[in-house]
Amino acid sequence: AQSVTQPDIHITVSEGASLELRCNYSYGATPYLFWYVQSPGQGLQLLLKYFSGDTLVQGIKGFEAEFKRSQSSFNLRKPSVHWSDAAEYFCAVGAGFQKLVFGTGTRLLVSP
Amino acid sequence: DTAVSQTPKYLVTQMGNDKSIKCEQNLGHDTMYWYKQDSKKFLKIMFSYNNKELIINETVPNRFSPKSPDKAHLNLHINSLELGDSAVYFCASSLSESGNTIYFGEGSWLTVV
Image 1 (cartoon, chains in turn purple, brown):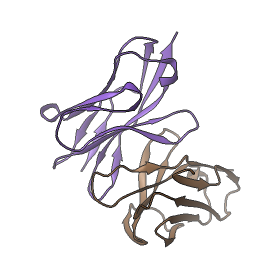
Image 2 (image 1 turned 135 degrees about the vertical axis):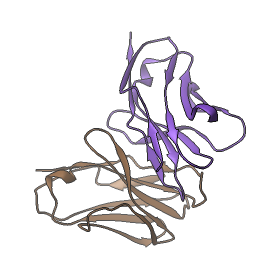
Image 3 (image 1 turned 180 degrees about the vertical axis):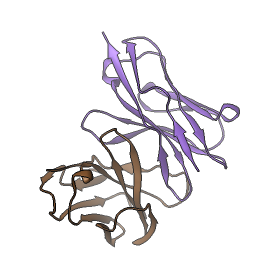
Image 4 (image 1 turned 90 degrees about the vertical axis):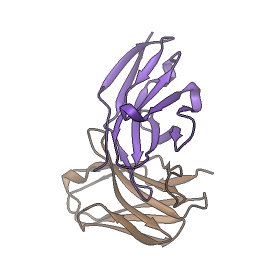
């Protein structure tokens, strides 16, 4: 069965510091991978997605993610975090006919 | 001009009541979904519809009945509400081909008291 693991429940990063959020997936075929962000009291916004091709994917708000098939990972990165990036981040894998299987999320806290 | 809109955004109701959440998308998509986010923020698909036909039903209690009058609408009706139904319900839509981006609404916060 498809699954997504986000091993960090929450992470605290200083404003201006770099960020990496981890995501590992389990899926038998070539995965479609997504990162979504959820701000408090808000819906889910797509940050970026990987379908095929270049394994380094650029997204909105300065985020990027790298697909590593050998490690079954799709980690999200940002070189310099802003206070407005504080939110919940969800990694997801497309598991057939547009069914998304989500990880449990990582809560990002940004300290001054 | 919200792409995926759902109403109401907040709903507080008593156990045993019946309630509905409505969803509409103006993106021209042919597939719509309902996802549930529980108190631990875990997101899980409940249903998906493609061209008004039920495609995915993830062992959701039959108290939950989705209805799709047309491709742009997918409503969720819940009978005999229970405390455990308290959650955030997200509507979403996409084109049907695998890998297309799924766009989410802003969620409906349901509290059963």
